[in-house]
Length: 257
Length: 64
Image 1 (cartoon, each protein chain N blue to C red):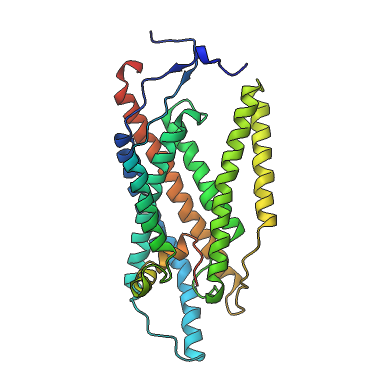
Image 2: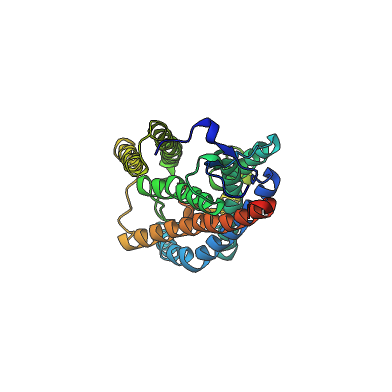
């Protein structure tokens, strides 16, 4: 089946106004931030503890590390607040992107479109950087290389967005030439996989080595906890945001049922 | 009227200028929280850095 021709396209009247869309997605962002903050309190903080113990052991043997500026309780609170803030800000970005590409997301409902966008967000902004330049607990990380590592991290995020755009563009091209959905999907997955593999292989690795006094299990547990926290955030944004936007769309178009 | 044989193309939602501005401000705040090592905030940056230290690590942002 071919791509519908222009004359057969019926613009729907269900598009909600942007202000309402933003408010609903931002509410989902707050929930996403709160849930990922809860994950941080229950799981990520437990993975940070052994790393902090290593730091303490170092300063006990290797002489004076500077006084800590904040107590651990304050820093744990900062971790929670930071997660909420991240959820809120990401939801603003999601709202703007959703408004811009709603007509191109291949799903039948706004719930489906938001879930899809959340999944893309997790893969591009969460999973991809986690594979290329994984999160590290305190006690790991050379202060002198933080600039290099941040540059790699930023470059991976940016190229992930480019990959998403290229995959989307190839889907458009194939569909407009009448290629069926199964073949288009296979081609899109292949294009995405090859480009992601190129990013993983060609981009420089983190220049840091893991210090010998940090057990592999401490690093692994922390990385899993961190990735889980990002997964909670994006899943909530997609699912709760999708449910809220779906309700909004149905309310603004009662005739469409 | 209800069932149309045509494909319904979901409308694009117009994004007003203030929304771009709001998003830019939000991203800048997130940058200050997750990235700034004193470049923008100088000494206050150290405080923000230490306060949000757990968030930086757990969100996977590179840190010292």
